[in-house]
Length: 72
Image (cartoon, rainbow, N blue to C red):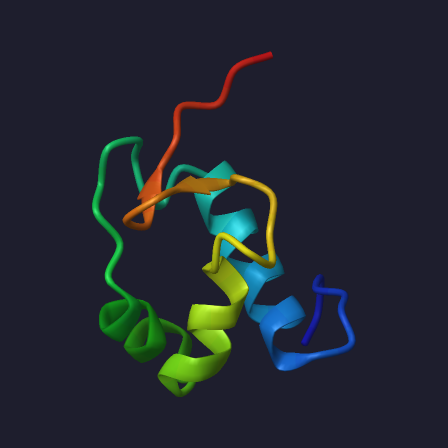
């Protein structure tokens, strides 16, 4: 995949989701559902769950898979 880095499927999907969040594809306050994200990125739910899980990633998204407002 061009433009993504990572060694595991969850790393790859985290980077893809992060790029989409930063590009404004998902506006702040939009609830992101694991099943919908899995469909958009054409992956099973497990790598997507690992990509956005609170135990594995810094907060690009808040609990409940809602994009947080980015601040400087």
